[in-house]
Image 1 (cartoon, helix red, strand yellow):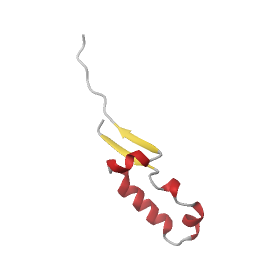
Image 2 (cartoon, rainbow, N blue to C red):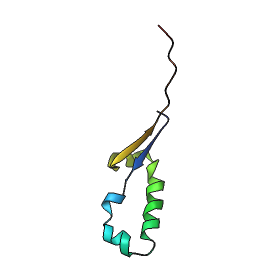
Image 3 (tube, one colour):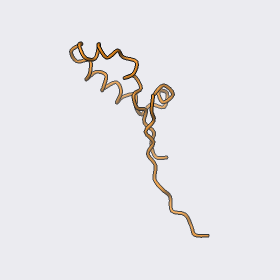
Image 4 (cartoon, rainbow, N blue to C red):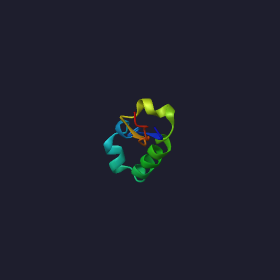
Amino acid sequence: VDAVHGVRVFADLVPGVLVDTEPGAMEALLQLEAAAAELPAFHAVATQLHVLGEARETSGA
């Protein structure tokens, strides 16, 4: 595994009406999500994890 990112760490916790009506709320939420995505402490509360990996070459047996 090369990297793990949390997805929707806070988005599901913020009421949609707040994001839709409060000026700048969507941008602030996106910035918060981006900042928290790579922090392992927030992976447990993320609704999804995006895991990046690379296949290793195996020796033939």
